[in-house]
Length: 258
Ligand SMILES: [Zn+2]
Image 1 (spheres, helix red, strand yellow):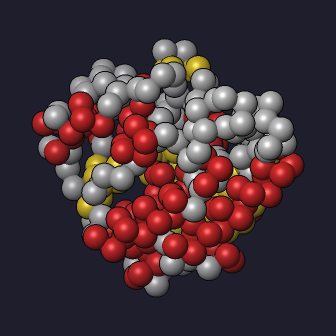
Image 2: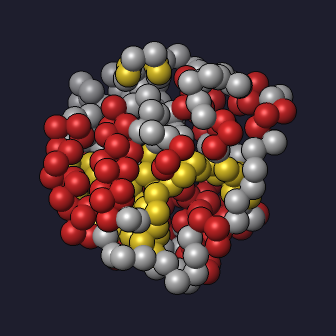
């Protein structure tokens, strides 16, 4: 929270879920199937700028892939050590340790083993300074038939945007399919917002068991769900969680995002 990227400001409570649900445009976005997103012979590589983004943006997708027995690799870009600035309860090193455990617990709820995750431990909040290193690691980790999922490169959080930009660059060089997911967009944008390429967004319907697994995985991220000892509110309060527990997840192909 609090990050500002040009006019995509993440502040306050953002657009309430009730407004999104009242907007007919949301339900008119074209559906996409699991096989459309990740053909059965392919591996899915999911880039999570912070521990919890893999659940918020892709938890339902990951649960469906786990149920299908598809190979999955989640790349944890940072350990999320900057979510509690000034906290005595959660100094950065202790927080990073807790968030790594929360992420593994969340993946378990989605049906994925710990070996599905690869941690890069890049600096939280400063991903942009590590872009070249990240591009190099991604290029090393990518396999020819991978489908890459990242946060949207105009998502409003600098780390989310850096992850999207680097993934777009590497995927274009390697000829890999790439989908981007909005995460904080649902906070700063409004229904029909002209800053969002709505015609390109696709939605994946989540079956009931995947939706349940996603809710359990979100609940594993305890450090993000409670108010902080500094008096700061929870990183993911109820109004934010409401936007993350829809029956759909949303993706756009990378050529639509540039
Ligand atoms: Zn994030």
